Amino acid sequence: MSQSWDRLVTLREEAIAETELVELRNANQRLQRQLRQAKKAKEELVEAVYQAAKDAAVTVGNPPPVPTPKTARSKQTAHVALLHTTDWQGGKKTADYDLDVLGVRLNLMMDKLDTLRGLHGHPVNEAVILFGGDDIEGVTIFPSQPFEVHAGLYEQVFAVVRYKRMVVDRALAMFPTVTVRRKWGNHGRIGKFGELPDIDNLDLIADRFAAEHYAGNPRVVWHYEDLSYVQQFRIGNYHAALLHGNEFYRSFSSQRIVNKVTAWQTIYGFGDVYLGHFHRADSYGLPNGTKVYMTGSPESSNSYAADQLAAKSTPSQRLHFIDPAAGRVQAEHVLHLGDMP
Image (cartoon, rainbow, N blue to C red; front, side, top):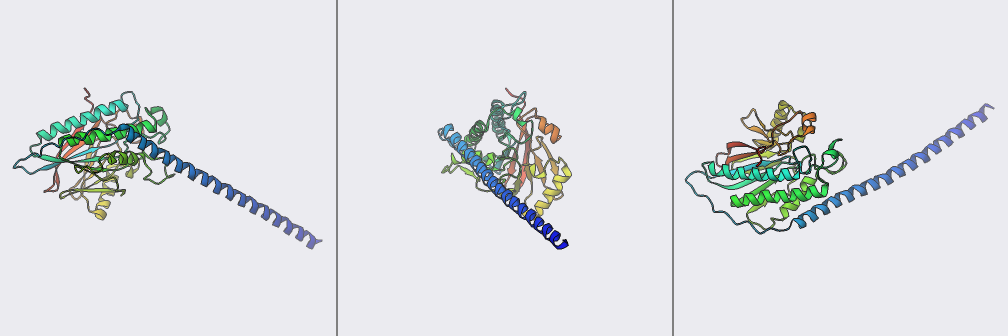
């Protein structure tokens, strides 16, 4: 009797194990199928965004080339204009900010660049433009975001491509040569955090299509192919780096930023650092005498930056004049953009 009972128990356990195995196999197949479907959906999403960016670039069209300005000559050493423009949040809608306001403020930024280059005291024949990321607002970064979006992704990409070209074209009207660097931000990512590669980003897509307008133009060097996490650049002997600012996560701690940047400096060897993300203009000295330059945003009334990052400032961007021979910042300007006409 005991042996029979043991045999029944064994058979029952084997049956249960077999059932569990079948269920696990079925669950695995379902998960594999769902994974394939999700992957396909994400690939289709990325493809759709790229197509929208291409359509936007085509629709913007090709305006006539900008005439080359005369090279300024002087006994003074020639300097280079460094424009750090970041956190446009193109598509954001608040009580006093939207795509139209962004366009007005970017034009005001270029007006101030034009004025300050004439007052600088040194000839300035070259501009380096840093597009610092979060050019696009996205639609799913934080819970309240859909209620603060002025335009869908298609319109956002369309507008940002147009505004990037406007900034570069206006710079070309002032300087014989223009060099462009860029870093992508967190608002432009496609999908939730970690769903897709970091470089599947609307900032990069808009930047690439804006850059293609200048293909073959000897006056423009646009480094859109560099996907390095830390964007390094040189202006003569001036060696600096461009970050977005989300590399430091939500922590708005000057000491955290200084510590991490100092560690990166020992690895890469750059000096000054430019970043945005925190929507405020500031600067921090580093132990080796270099600086972290923090640039504000053209937007205003950003409740997310105020609540989550404890950061708030008036609309602004940043302009420096670089002495390439000495390898240093010769003049610093915060371009305040709140005084709209």
